[in-house]
Image (cartoon, rainbow, N blue to C red; front, top):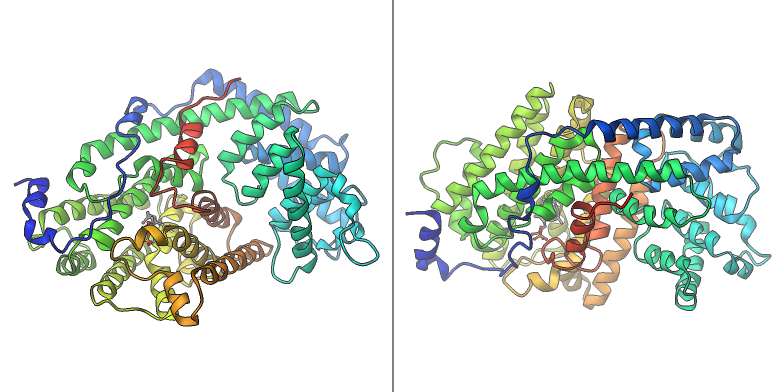
Length: 556
Ligand SMILES: CC(C)=CCC/C(C)=C/CC/C(C)=C/COP(=O)(O)OP(=O)(O)O
């Protein structure tokens, strides 16, 4: 009997199963057309990009430009998505500015609000300690930001973007945020020029919290219409966008082929089929060409764990789940006999993925990572199991119990662990040790993920039997309304961003590329889980993102 037949005929179990009625995939076989054995970039495009990179590098290191002009150039390079080509040059230029124009953390440049805000943002982004006191000069005698600034729309927008890098206790930035936000909201309604469009976009999606590919896509179209743009940079950004898109298409094409061969949507129809959405998640973590294999593995992690999550959260009966958990704990392909067919099928997929990760770790010479991976995987599944028991026993956890368990069941530690394996041998054993000790930056990213997911998916999840989320636990414990619990959740999310910003300042615990992955994972949450779970309900914004990044080429 096939897995599907056994599922359909299993009427006895159907009575106890909890089905979520997820929408089917929007994409089906669509990406299969891009599957390819050849992952090489067209030689001609490669040569054009190399020549443009060379010209840009010369411009960046030339002595003739004034420091703040270079800062604006660096900002454009970052926003256009090509800063990964010039990391050393950017670091050196900002380091020199920090050495020459910052004293005891105070920026000594005297310039306009826009330039100072961009400089502040870039220095912080690079991990430099700079004081927000530089913005004091824009305050009046009463110590408030002066109303005269409202006319400087570009400056206001830049200051608003700069405030996103704030850490705890920065009153000036808190005030700057409130001031710019209030006035920008008003300006956006009043004016109709293109700046108003930018303001509206930023009010919804700030630069610091945006996914680099989405920002590149948007900023290329803004930069194109800027009369003072740098043509070399613009062409480089466009060619690079298409070159990356081409590579990403081949990757998702190959993943689509693998997914189709597995036939999961037909065999496990109760679960979400989110292959394309999972690829976008992986691409959000790292988009650069050198992470091609890492993206493929991460996509598999997301798409498979979505099915595992739906098995524990909805479809599996408690007895089946206990058996499945024990099988995972054994970490072995033997002894599947007791499992129902659909779980045997799921277990084999998971087992094959574990093997693929193992092979990758061996190839990259980082075998030490595997024990950490295995431990996180088991811990994650055990947390799913504990939640399933809560639900089965109708147990209502306290907020503390919920927080403890849900941060593990979020799967974030497993995700970060695997994403570091994809980075190859720069991920030393110390990195995995650091990760397993739950440093503050990881804690913050997990809290942010858990709360953003809980706030937006709560209503849909509570339509079926589902374990309590942060909102129910908080409402029960503090006897507050849903709005009160949402507000508390949002405050904790804002605090988590401040923690992440603080932990990204020098000296950092680990090299910056590892922190960038955490930042990108948090950015994905900000983009995809802002006011709806766009991963699960993927017909709206998520579809637009996938189409814009993976289907539509940039006009050169
Ligand atoms: C947002 C999040 C928890 C991400 C962690 C990373 C991860 C393991 C992603 C795999 C896909 C997944 C389970 C998404 C959340 O579904 P869900 O909203 O049904 O998760 P839940 O059952 O934990 O609420």
